[in-house]
Image (tube, rainbow, N blue to C red; front, top):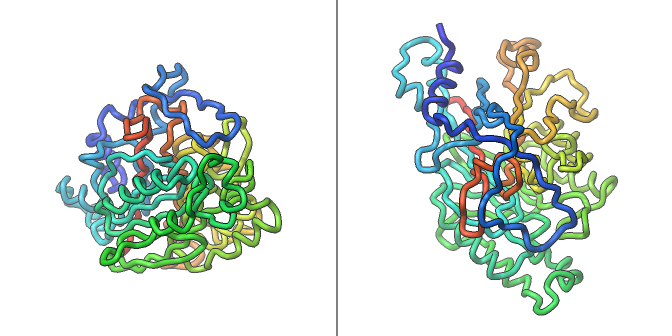
Length: 389
């Protein structure tokens, strides 16, 4: 008898069809940081080194991740698809005991706006603009606030200069020589509109929302390790440890602009640019989902099942470092203890979905690019997480 997982994988293949055969190109070396992000008129020709499997959906017992889909008809959630398939067996009955919460993950939109699939919550991990200009943030904030998702949680990134007021007043002339913006006016754009609590901007702070009979606790941090002296930059070492230590222990959703070290953080020059202090902190907290961006070329997702016996003070192993590939998932050996309840029957599974949700154009997977208002972009990454009914 096929498991629900096998059945659902077949349903995904039928719904996505041949679109998962997109080709993979090489990432472009970005060189020095510029305030104006590249916006080509058309995507380049595909590179011959292609791997269609990189864009296949990730399916585990607790998590489903989609990279490629039709925005107007996104892939079904597992419990919905089991009903639709009319599969009458024990595996399907088991999966219907759970609700699946859908998160739409994106980052590094850089002024671009585009169609977004439906979902329960939208998570945006910063770099809303090129350099924090009022008119650009006004356009992006209006777009996000108008999206129909019941919960929209947003943080800033290093390009959103004007959202770090003290930094901008001191350093803003480096980018905005002719005319400085009013950071107070810019900040008002990120306030929650009266009568509509669906949009929340977080800056080193927490929030919570109710969804599918569960309270989801969220923390948002716009920081990333120092690079070129942009907004919300902190120095590696002690300063980074202070930033990481501010993350609460009991969160379910973590948004940071920069990635943790060795998790979807590989640059085109093969450097791991993630934060060394963030990795062990995430291993201690074990949020259900950690969304970030910043390193555009490392876009992708990793499902990490935690071993309660592992030394969480040690760096995360290289199994999660896929060198910038689009997807990676836990191995069967990693799942054995949590699936069977070994070491304690009935113990709640502990896993984290790491998502580098950067949607900004690179030279990777060019055939998956879509046209937005400000140029080409990748699709937001869909993450479905199951919770008991």
